[in-house]
Length: 292
Image (tube, rainbow, N blue to C red):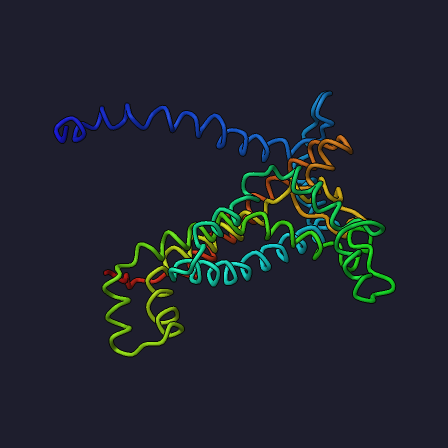
């Protein structure tokens, strides 16, 4: 087997199908998106080459920058929520009763489609008979907010179901990483008199730091290109208050039939995501590797 795997032609044969799939399904569409961004095109008729006009228009488009800000806000909230997921995973990994049952509960949102989650939270946020406002009224709040209709709070109201949707995913990752820590290290710390908080902060968290950095990249990059749940819940409204880059691109391409400009926005989204990913990797890069 080692002799076969040392043959470069065999290795090429193994990875060639995957490379072809990546090229056809990812690389070529991305390059085409950048190319279409150079065109004035409605998606059906003839294309007209207009150079960088669409990209220059995007730089001067206040709606594009507003949607970019919203995407970055979602990325910040998603990154901060990782700390909550980590705390939950630490509690679950500390051999509490019912940990297996709680893990299954946290995973339920992952089993639902984004459309189903959006419909569920639309009902929760319903201003007249939604569960949230009913609770607020029962607590004495006279004029509970219209969560998805108020431009000042709609964006933050949408963040909640998005964070809820991915809680199980990140908790499961942290839980697996924590359970992979040798029990002998934890027992040695307990013998030395370390408290549970000290064990969590000074032993467990540093030992799963590599996993935590990966989840930061996943959360931020995933947030920058997030689309489906926001589009179903508000369509980017009211008046663009919950618009993100992906939903703005979709509207331009498939609602306004400005496929060239929409492609330019999509390509800029790709560039922004790549820059942010590179920046995060550089910031979280460390030369020291903890081994156990």
